[in-house]
Each structure stands twice: as structure tokens, then as C-alpha cells.
Image 1 (cartoon, rainbow, N blue to C red):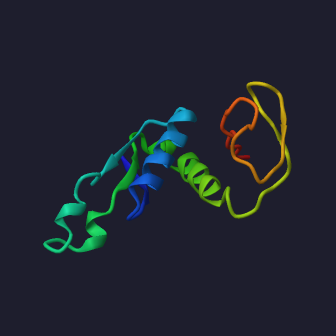
Image 2 (image 1 turned 90 degrees about the horizontal axis):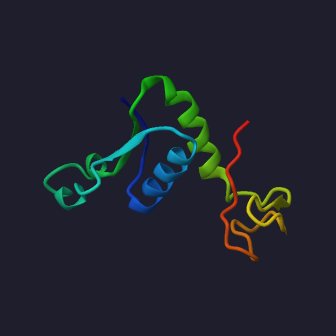
Length: 107
């Protein structure tokens, strides 16, 4: 197992876990409930961490995480909804017509 990402924000770590699972990468969240120990333990040691189960998936997982974290920095080009085929402007992350989330693409 290898650590891919850590943050004080449970929501971000959980969201990235879902993104990796959508790409077929098995992963777990460590320290998910350890934040209550901050003060007795160093705060950064209590942050939730995302770990991949197989070491050989680490590089791909890291690429996906970096792409997902950078996804909201620039809107990018328009995209087509994979469910209803509606054309969606680049600044939106969900289809206005059917609610499908924008797929993450990593080259």
C-alpha cells in the first residue's frame, strides 16, 4: 500500500476516493476518525489519508488525483454528457438536463 493524498478535509479525501474507485483503483481512507485525537497527537498526523491497495496503481492514482484537484482551477472546454449527450459549458461540473457528473479524463 502507498499513500496518495492527505488533507485536513474529510470531504476532499472521500471525494478523491470515489474518483479513484470510478477508475477501478482499489483504495482506502486511513485516519478517517482520528481527528478527535488532535492535541494529544500532532494535528497533521490526524489528517485523513488516501492509500492505494496495490503499489503498481500508485502512479496512475497520483495522476488522477492531481487532475481531479486541478479540475476546478480552469473551466476548460465544453463537454458532452455521457448519459443524455447534452452539450455542457466547461465551467459546469454537472449536466443541467439529467444531473450526471462531468467525467474526469486523464491523458
